[in-house]
Length: 211
Length: 287
Image (tube, rainbow over all chains, first blue to last red; front, side, top):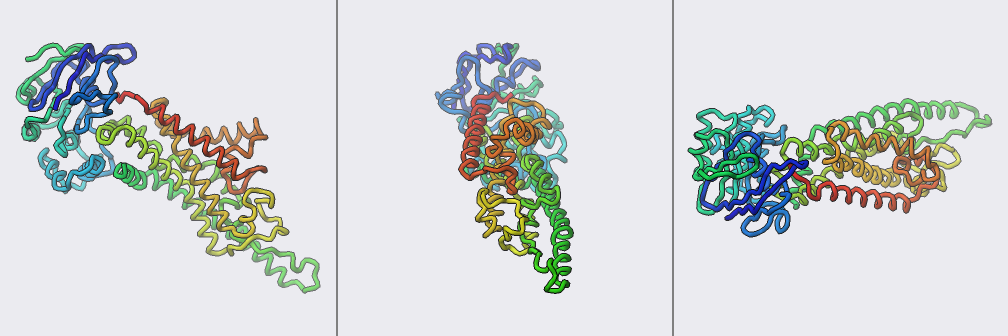
């Protein structure tokens, strides 16, 4: 698995949010994206996910250009900004709907994924009754369900308590293999260094340095 | 594709909006039936009993006409204001179930989950299908319920044209059906209402990306309908037979409505909706 960014620039209403980003992400590594608020971490993730189109440059997934050859990476899980689910459904029902759309994620695996992030699959509460932390956990569960080849997590430990952070960290680590690319954006530098194998720094839309 | 469509259908028919639209429609049909029973059927029966009490030689003897199913059906019952209300509020019934869903899912970020799993095309097409069918059902439901309720106390026979109690004249569209097989007329016209319920329900879907306000998006089809009903009709009365706000009513409010005309206008509207749907979702950033 490979994600290749070639001179990616994105302007929104004339304002550059990504500037000439060139980088290759390869499988078998957890990448961390750090940087101040508004530096372009989320935009970079959206671009890699195929959710926004670069003004210039290209994003290639295994050699195929996003927006030309393919619309979205074929196997991807993502959590970008706040998780959003159907309010009138339970966590399990929400994941079942996504699993059905995704195609072929067995029920056992859905339940196991919920347990992996510290949620009870038999919890009958509807999503709108979930706390902020529970919503975040469900968002992570949706992103890692079915073990996709690319996982993009934007601020995954937001609103999660200390105990929960270690649960999430373990869940993410457990997914690591030679093929999978995991990219995590996090403002907590310490946590980032703990979770990621390679930390990349972003500033004013540029991918600046590699630590 | 099938999975996405069934998922969207389930979401549409399980939505609170559909429940509200369906209950409102059923309630309207029930109230209208009670009104029709009391003010049409019972009055007519009273008249019948009065006539039966007259001597056979009385000049009024025999001038009574049977009430029949179309006089109780909300689609053609024109003694009360229920018909006008239903057909004026038709876009509201249609948009309530699911029309706003893409707008909401786009705003909340849920659409992202669907897009990356199934792609833009499949997601939008499934959404459009679910919106169309749920909107159409919500619009057609009051007519079907009213037909069933009317059938409980009124005979499904054709009306005697001499009685002059028919809203559809004998030179109008499907008049043969109206006079001879009224239930088939009602069901066929409910099909047209279903189609236009679907068409109105699609309008908010086309507004995603152009309109920012949720309420505005929801109310827009209603405004468009009012514009057609009052504005366009008064400005261009010669085209009234091709005005959807006019021909969608089974009472056939204007002369000259033809099935061919309805098909032509419907095909044109569906083509425009399809084009707008494609344009509004072609290459839009998910910000």
